Length: 271
Image 1 (spheres, rainbow, N blue to C red):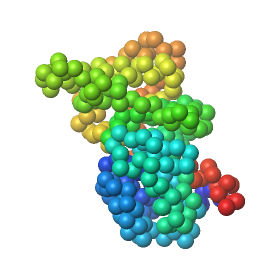
Image 2: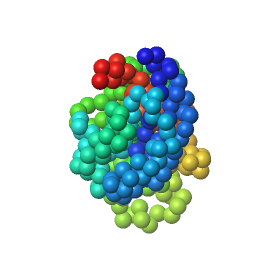
Image 3: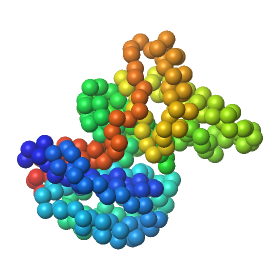
Image 4: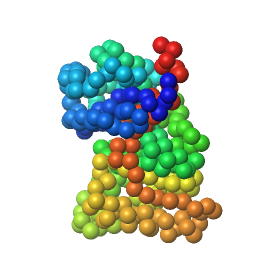
């Protein structure tokens, strides 16, 4: 099968929203979005209704980028925001409904893959994707593939810094007394420090920042100032050039899920 003409369904399963996209020749031909239900049985019911709008007759497989920690059997084992889904065989049920094989990785892993392949067009050997959404995490694309381990597929950044939001791990009573301008300055300082540390630890050629919380207002007032502050330090101290930019793909996890199907064509064809 010519991978360029492959048809797939790609799903971005998030704690807040779920998106379903139909792909043909690397282009999204249909996009469906709905609020992710609190209960997995309600999700199955909602999905069953929404998927009827997509013609599955030529679709090879479904690729899924899902938030949380999923094991090798595609069962959710840990989640900060979807506790009711833990241990539920969600994707087994979905696969049975659509009668198609389902491939799954974390949403941030696939966002890194989608951004590297479709956003940056494979121009970088090493790309770090940082997601600022319901959660705050990252994933590394290196030498043509996602860097992952069996212990954790993503960089769990929630306990380091999240702009305009301070988790219990880094909130003190003094933070609660800060005025909005002081909170903004602290967010800028913490985020710039995180970018600097990740740059030295992982040595990416480019850091792409995306996610639902990357609004125009946050970009202008917090994220871009943090990037400028980090770049000033990195340009003086790194031994190579690095770029830090906004993600170029609107739905990188969806594109990564499509790419995941493309990269498994031969294995899928045997079934």
